Length: 190
Image (cartoon, rainbow, N blue to C red; front, side, top):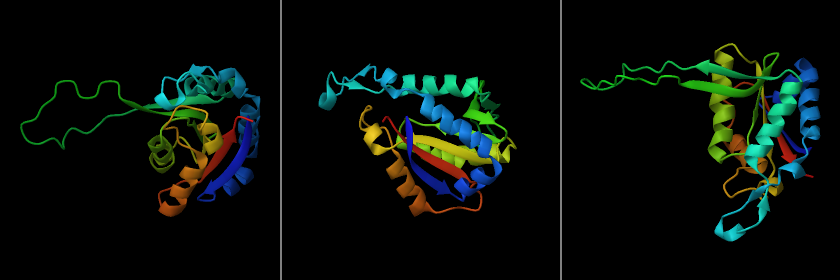
C-alpha cells in the first residue's frame, strides 16, 4: 500500500518529523508492507455492488495489527469508570458498566495510532476526542490516523469514510486548544 495523502492537523507532521522520526519510518514501513490485494476478499451483498469483490476492512485491520505488533507497537486499553451521579433521583442500576474501556489501536514511545476503515464518525472521534483523552491520561503526546483515500474507500462497502472528506471537515472545524498534534495519512491500495 502507499501513502498518497498527508495532512498535518495542529502541526502534527512537523512535530512527528522532528520528535518521532523513527516511529514515522516504522508507520511508513508497515503501510508499505501490507499487501492490500490479499485482502480483497469480501463479497458484496449490497444492491448496487451485488457479488462484487471488495476490500475487507476487518482483514486489512488484522494485517496492520500483525505488522505493527512485529515492530513492538501495542494496543492500549484503559478502563472506564463512568459517573452515575448524574442520573435523576430515584433511578438506580445494579450493574453500571462492568468492563467498559477505551482502546487505542497502537501505541509506542508516546505515539498513538488509529487505523480506520470504518464510518466517518469514528475518524472524527479518534482525532477530536480519543487522542485528546489518551493524551490527558498521559499515554501519548502525538497521534497518527491512517485512513483510505476516496479511490480506495470506493472499493469497500458503502459508508466507509475517506481522507478527503476527513481533511475537509478538520479544516472547517479548526484547531481547539485541547487538540494534540496529529498526522493524518491517506493510503491507497495501489
